[in-house]
Image (cartoon, rainbow, N blue to C red; front, side, top):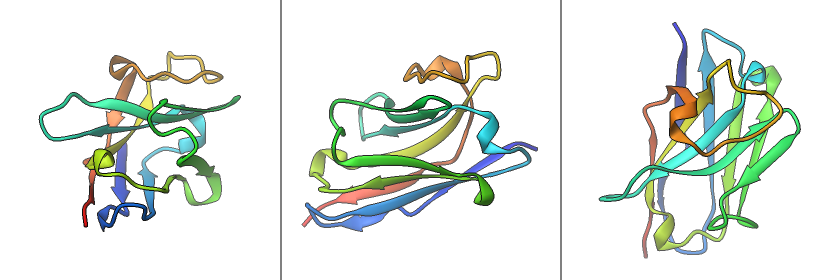
Length: 126
């Protein structure tokens, strides 16, 4: 069974940092393009970062503050988030893109992703 499990969320003050992890079971993450998305209360889910064979991509709202990386030995993709703002408050999800999608490019289109984790809540508040 293919499964993704996110962890690392929590309550953090503005300006703080968190490290979110996405661990896969039942398959190897390095075979897939991996995306991180978030969904704030009352808002649509949006892409924040993606990692593919040829590199990574970031949404404009998080560029310079978020860093995505892949640890194939641990079958994990990590999202480091810094200089957190209240507007970063959301449930963060990782997902794998469909195996029909080219591995050398990123996408923030939700319909391209086929396997999702359950999410981890990030709350930024003083």
